[in-house]
Amino acid sequence: MSENTFVVKASGEEAPFSINKLRHSLRRAGAGKKAANRIAAEIQQILYPGISTREIYRGAFSMLKNASPHTAARYRLKKAIMELGPTGFPFEKFVGEILKEEGYRVQVGQMVQGHCVQHEVDVIAEKDSRHFMIECKFHSGQERKCDVKSPLYIHSRFKDIERAWLRKPGHGQKFHQGWLVTNTRFTTDAMQYGACAGLNLVSWNHPRKDNLKERISRLGLYPLTCLATLTKKEKQSLLDKGIVLCKELCRNEQWLKEMGLPPSRIGKVLEEASSICKSTIQQ
Image (tube, rainbow, N blue to C red; front, side, top):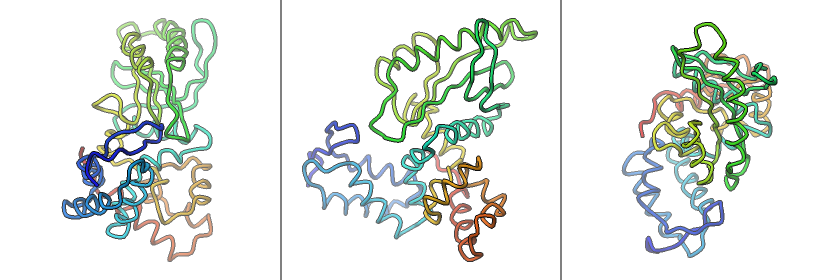
């Protein structure tokens, strides 16, 4: 099949297949040039009109897993972020960990008094003269998008909190900003409103620089849901305890022992987690 073959995205939209885009995603996950070219060529052979991007991903992931399990774990990053549920709290904690790694002082799940009313804020981040109120919107399906209602609501809450913050000593000269972070995408109207209102919108691929995908890869902060050596139930057990990162497991294997995993499996989990975190992958 040629690159003129149209594939069906998770949203239901059709788009022409791009072998270069597939190669790039494999290389970004850490696959070698030869492996990326081989897998992309094999995927191209099984294409048919109307094939879903999910089927393409599954085929590429299976081939990559056979060649390099830890590289495959990085390749499934987007799916792993979707598994930070079913509640939104693991995603909120994950966003907080990203900002901590970027040097911010972070608080997760705080009650904050605004000028008019009290608000529950997902993440508060502060560094130097920057002070951010961050709301996280988690979706378990890739087809879900954040429409304009979310930034409208978040911005109004931020303005109420900002009025209270500005009355605090030393805050008059600080840069305050509201953020909305989602694990999927924003509609065009949502992005237009965010840009106009000064609300920072961060999604899987927005903005072009410092989007969620780029930040995770640059910092090497991979969620434990990337791990193929843990079952879905085991991952959920760790998430319920507030553990979200592969590197957290590397620092404290006691959590795995408490789950009753035998030493042989603990060794495999730690080996995979360590290999995922070993090096950051540049965009």
